[in-house]
Length: 74
Image 1 (cartoon, helix red, strand yellow):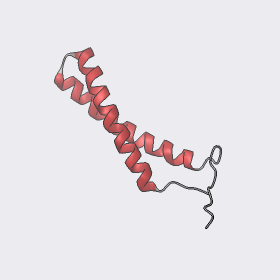
Image 2 (spheres, rainbow, N blue to C red):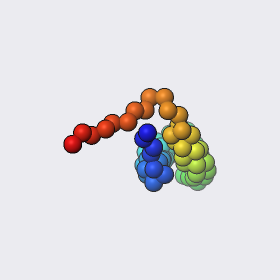
Image 3 (cartoon, rainbow, N blue to C red):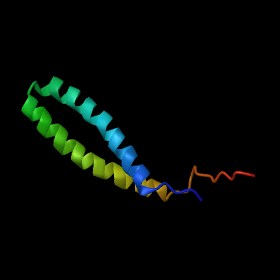
């Protein structure tokens, strides 16, 4: 059985959030036209989101559907 290590889940969560932070910043600034409101929104939203994403990844790691083990023959 294949299980993803926590460090991999953390790395995936961080890189995904970097992309999301950029997109959230662009959209929030377009809507608010305020740097301070944009920064507050982006910091709060993405701090919560990275935690939720990590929990989501770890929960899906326990679901066996769609996984298979690859064996390498020597």
